[in-house]
Amino acid sequence: MLMDDAGLWCQIECAIVHHRAALFLDRDGVVVADTQYLGRAEDLRMLEGAAPAIARCNALQIPVVLVTNQSGIARGYYDWEGFRAVQAALSVALAAAGAHLDAVLACAYHAEGKTPLRKDNHLWRKPNPGMILAAAERMNLDLSHSWIVGDSVSDIAAAAAARLAGGTLLAAADGLMREALKLANDNFLVESAPDLASAVATLIAHGQLARRR
Image (cartoon, rainbow, N blue to C red; front, side, top):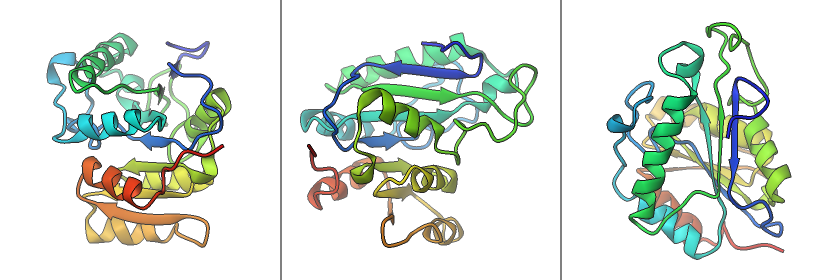
């Protein structure tokens, strides 16, 4: 649902999860194909293996939270109704695989946006951690054991700023991976994977998304 803020979207399906570790996901390039400003449901294309990977997390009661920048709204390429339609189509595609998202947060603010969405460096816009922190507050998440899977350094930077356990960068070129690795430290791991299914399989196999109390 659109919040009392023209540039923010926050839809929580599961508000209380007993301090569990969560899996945060970027949307375009991670769950669905990145078509550059996806604002029409008919243009949505699921990435292979993404829905089963999310279903696997659902079965293990790992909260799955989508956090997505939506500068296309600020730029006027589509609106929140277009975003809503894409999310509805995504929900249908996930349900066909027995999967669902526990929360969806989106930020439309951008420095090159149109009024009233023209705003630089909004707290919710990745690489800032606002969407992750807002989800954690509303859902009682254990961020210290949570991970993010994204396809840009800004996804990893947002996770580091929110003090997650780590981030996985998908299909990253050498240059991007080097930038992401600069964010790694003793408390924040940075890894790579070819796709979401591989990332989830590795995280589960290593116990990095284990349920916490």
